[in-house]
Image (cartoon, rainbow, N blue to C red; front, side, top):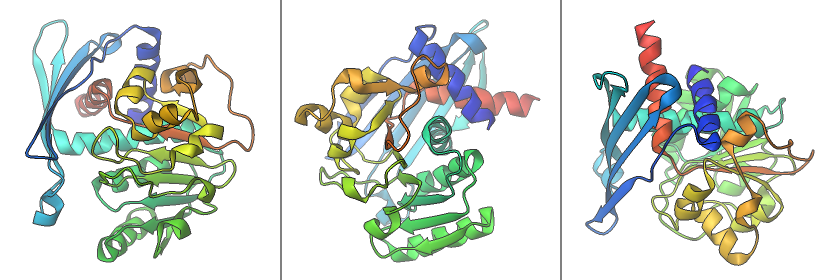
Length: 300
């Protein structure tokens, strides 16, 4: 919860213009491989960070992680390097924590049933985070690799004590779930989740996809949804569903609500029964906030 709280503070500061999170530098090579570098400062806590990561989509087929990297945390007053953190682990933790924040701000308070598409590192982190902010009792899992999905389900039972159903298709997992999380490594523009599968009043976290045009959830869902993003400009640049929904006229930029606005809050809550959708892309300020939270916890 400390990470979720730190992110709420950081996003509030970002929306208010009190801190900075410049766009990441992304160098594509070898077709679909990426080298990424991001830096941000968080003035409230007196820290900055630099993260360098690699994203290699065919690594899971080699038995290697999709992401490798390192995060450097610095003290803004002295310029000292105060911590070095594993970039892949921090990316997973902060991705889960951001989804946890969006869930805390948007999902029904009594949400008990969670659907997860994907069975990788980020899917694990999202189960942890959502379980920390909502009274989850049941998780439905779908992954294209049945063996991985079964192993993920066994981990959920052992780690959290939730009832688990491993589903044969995405629709069976998503229908009637109060919270839906998509955490796949798709690079396709064909949706994995149809809009009419999502129950009225449900909350959806979308964090997967390997580039700015990858789509996990049908963009038409955003037409009638309360749509939440980390930052409007970042979503317009990098969020596949948002980009497609804007191009199709389903939403305008003014329809996008920033996490920082909800955390303060400066806007009203969504109407009862309306679907809420959080589409995350990952921003350097998230790495800074979560790295600070980890460091502060370790330092006591």
